[in-house]
Length: 199
Image (cartoon, rainbow, N blue to C red):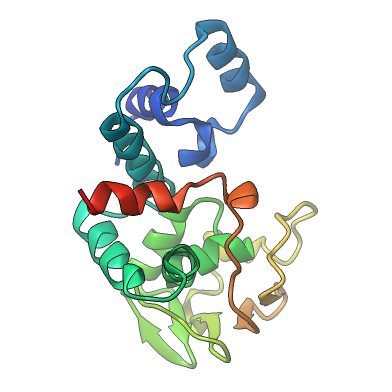
């Protein structure tokens, strides 16, 4: 787990979107005062490295994991869309996107600690890729856990993407479609990541 100060430094370099905790007005004002522009004045390599790190920290994955995802996606007709699907359809990302977990890190812990089932089978692998038609649920024995007990009564929730159907009363998420990549929505530049790995 990274300390807040380390996250702050990384956010200064890569942008606040890489950590949910930095997406605040206070951080935005501090960043504006510092007048640091992300990716400014560097070489092509520096620009590519920064974008690769932004993707890594946004999804909380290792260098090897991202390299493997990029290698597989690059073999597809639309590498950016395939990389986006691979990252978004990890079970930890789905739990975050659905609003069951407040951060991707919290989602990874939920899965690692065995609170999640996919199609009725318990899993402890956050990187497991789900597919259309899968149903993710909170394990029956975990539903009274304080992590989940208040979800049904929550007044404010993050809006789930269209490709997910979420039932907070049943603590269930259905995969009804696949995520579509849009650089404007994600704020991530996958082609630049592929440039980094193509050097």
